[in-house]
Length: 253
Image 1 (spheres, rainbow, N blue to C red):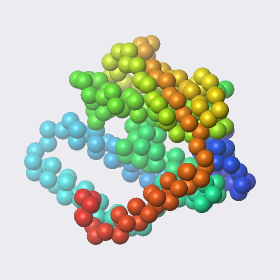
Image 2: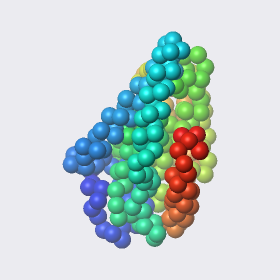
Image 3: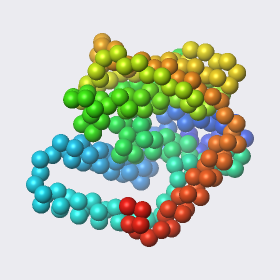
Image 4: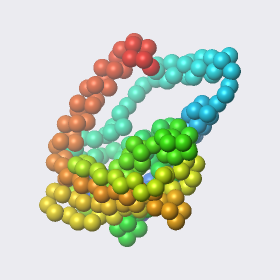
């Protein structure tokens, strides 16, 4: 996708156009030292998750690691926090950094340790991507849990439907599991829009391991009024302010 500086553009640019721009790669100078280090920290945490899931370390080794991670968690607990959608205006137009929320996505975010991460690119109306799912995503022995396959499709088809120019939210996602999806193997995905009928955007996608089709999906997305997005953000911000005002440890973190 063509790079567009995240902090540039018409202040009155409509939300659908801006959400599509969110899927475009940021310019090289967007990756500040802080953002780069956040991505590196997230990658290290992914490595911890992968090793922890399969380790046979002793109780003492696990206790020492837990002590260290608890100290790190407390250190971050005392730092300022923002939200994934920082910068969204009350009108639901965006005047700030869309790529920051993109970087923190639970599926594609390089700064989110929960993300595999899934990597997506768009070319001539088709969204293609690659992802490798490790031990933490295991369902059947040696295979990816079906719920994570559905999540990958939701992200893939969510990116795809944004190409319509009137993007919305998932109304229905139907996944057809064709064959077991292996862990620790590079998986390829592909999504495209199949039809647009008023507010209804229909999409279809595939997930494969090499030449083997593992799953297919159809997604129905419903275009939304931008003011609804603004209302969702306002409600989320209020909950976050309450959560971060509580003493450390009162919510389990």
